[in-house]
Image (cartoon, rainbow, N blue to C red; front, side, top):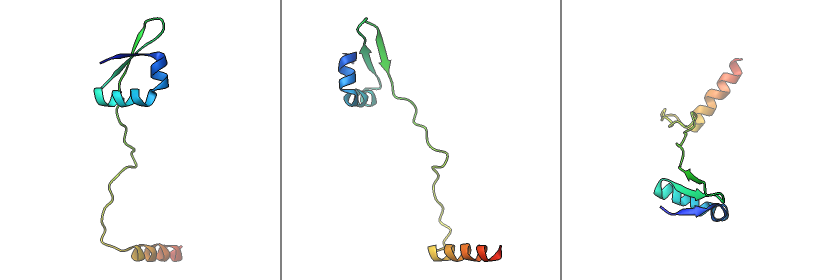
Length: 73
């Protein structure tokens, strides 16, 4: 794994992030010689990202149920 300079990293951030994904990490050396390691974070899925279920009813039936529910109130 190569170490790139801060200047190079900021000018080529897209390439640096691709390397992080491919290699697992990337290293950046600042002007004062300090080295920083960048690693990918954990992917966080949305709590709302759920699989649908097949109820075996059509769109028209769902619309009918909605209309019936509105008439009842």
